[in-house]
Every structure is written in structure tokens, then in C-alpha cells.
Length: 314
Image (cartoon, rainbow, N blue to C red; front, side):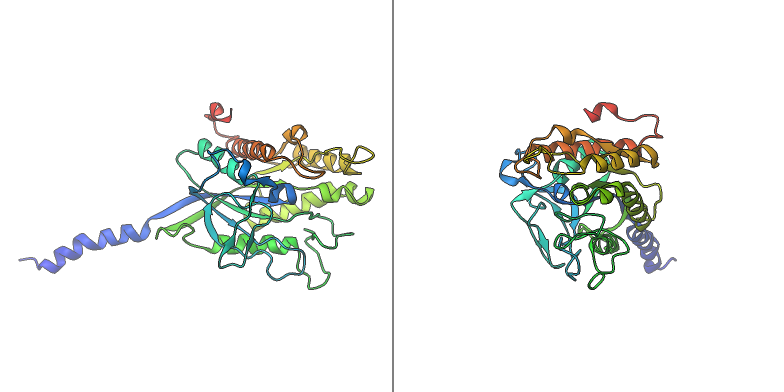
């Protein structure tokens, strides 16, 4: 006669093994750049469809600070909701939301339409006024990978801290199931602060951008990771009609990058957006930009797929 305990073990052990083996696969997208990525939209101006928690999408945003500040890049996973724009802060234990938003809300909503059966997450680190070139940068900070000034910590280091800490979390939504994060795209909105100093810095933008994006891809361990660039624009709100004195040179560098580097795209709708001040888009601009970023990165991820859901892009 078979012992009852062996029957129980025979039934229970396989179930335990299956439970242990269960894992969730989550597509994760990185949002980076300067103020128009950090976000200056007003939460009070959001439509009802975006002015609420999105419990299906989680976000890890690194604390945005100037160079040589050890609190840079601290963060924690949280449900996506309004308040991840300028003024957001984190000490690594709790997040402090602001009254502003960036592209993340509409970006996530559009991605949910494009990836209806997949789980999604966002990692964000962006810093107001930051440039890639460190020349002339004082308060806002630079992304120059070889930065050596002060304590040698800058925006690139905070980017690395942000993504490494975010990717190290095994259960980002706290549901008790291990999460496997799959890097699925880099979204980059930056360049204004490389266009307002000297002609040489602006001319160097393509080379600086190329190197930085190569290193970011390497940080995500995927040298063909899709990259979408947001093209800078100019409000014209200055005495000479140009806020960014060498903006055309940076725009040229962005276009060259998108045209010559593999698996990249550029979003140009920024030229149609209206501004709240000299530098920042109105709220509806951030909403539209998030949608355009989502569509562009989706197409890059599906460029070799025969059946792309083109109807979802409209």
C-alpha cells in the first residue's frame, strides 16, 4: 500500500516547482535628456484619461540633480501617475511627486495600445538644462562620460545609477512574482543646452551624441537597442528671433545621427508645438510628444515583423 505522504509529495512538489518557475516578462523603456524630457506640463491641464494612476505600468525615476551630488539617480519603483515632471524628487526610499508631467503618461498609454498583451515599465532620468558637452556647464550638469571635475560625478553617472538600481529589482510591482526586464528602447530629448554656448560645441554634438548613445546601449547590454531622438525646436522668443544661437547645428547633428546610425529614428513634431516660456512646450505638446515617441520606438522594434499593427499608430 502506498504511503499517503508520498502521494501528497507527488502532487504538491510539481505545483511548488511551477510556482517557483513563474516569472513575468516586462518591456522597459528609458526616457532621458533635459528639461523637455523632464517635463513642464501642468498636471491640472491633463485630460481625465491621463490624470490618474496607471496601475498597469510602473516607473523608476532617478533623482535629478546637478553634477557632484551623491543623491543623483536615487529612486524607487512606483505606479505611473501624474507628477513625474520637473520638481519630482526621490531619496531612494520615497518619491515626491510634483504638479508637472512629461511625456511618460501619454507614452505609456500609447504603448499599451501598441503592446496590448505585454507588461510595460519605464525608467527615467532627465535633468533640466543639462548638456552633453561639459564645457561651460556650471549648475545644470553634463552627460560627458569622461567628466573629471569636482568629485567626478555627473549626469552620465546618475544615468548608470538609475538604470542599474532599477534593473536590479527582482519584483518591481510587488506582486510576489519575479520580473524579467527586457530593455526595449532609449528615448532621448536633449540638445538645447549644447546649442546656446559656442559654435564648436554645437558642431561637436553629433560625435558627442553618438558616443553617449553607444555607451547607453552598452549599459543596457544591447548594441542594437532602438533609439528615438526628439528634434529640438526654437520658440523664437528672443530679440534676434532665436533662443538657441547654434540650434541648426545641433539639429543637423540629430538628423545625421538618425540617418546614419542603425536602428534609430527621429521625431520632428516638436517644430509644431507652442511654448509656455522661451524654453518649454505647453502641456499638449508633451502629450503629443509622448505618443510620437511611442509610435516611433514601436516601429523600430517591429521593423522586421511582417504584421505590424499600423492601424494602432493613428
